[in-house]
Length: 299
Image (tube, rainbow, N blue to C red; front, side, top):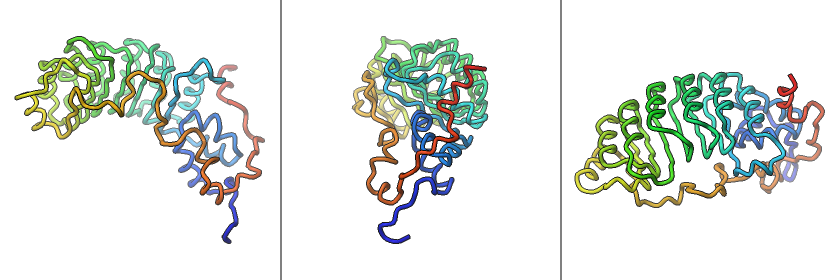
């Protein structure tokens, strides 16, 4: 290619296109990327593009022109059973969780952030269908210690558990459930949890493979003296109750975009990319049925 000559984005090999588009979230793919041209739409419909589904959003659901739950169900359908990781922000429901669980028996990672409509029973019912689940993150979602115990019993391969709560009164229910049912844990975050020294000791007694322990804002733990020594000897990385929380959202919906760039800027705002790949004429919608996930509503 001669200096100064540009290449049409639509002529990229499918393998390279998929690598680029895979860096976008599911919303960006369904709302923007798949509308660019036929070749991109074909790539976006490939099940391999949907092994991971990231439904990150800022929580402004009433201002959106589309239904995120319908969109998420469509993304799950596109995975054709190959889904292994899914992140849901704000809009999760019991019905959606069970829809995912019924179609994604190979799911290994589930992340739920501020999903106030998901109930204890709904979460347990879904996770019972996900025996391969290894990573579970629940940020500011409802979950009792009893339900956490059921989750641990249902997922014997659990290696990572992250529970974020607003600071609680002393309560060791979560800690005792973890100690009793999750011995294979390697990474444990109990942000804002109410566990006490008793609960922490129970975890240390049972979770012998623990490598990372995050106790930030767990203000009922006195991580001093023998307990502090025990943690430092047993666990490679320990975050203390008063450590900085700069990397954790503790109340604002203004989360940073997890990939370091927003929406479809990868294709439109980067001078280096645009100088090399010319998007001129790449607006062929001829085989695009706008929001074809709405077809499901008409069946």
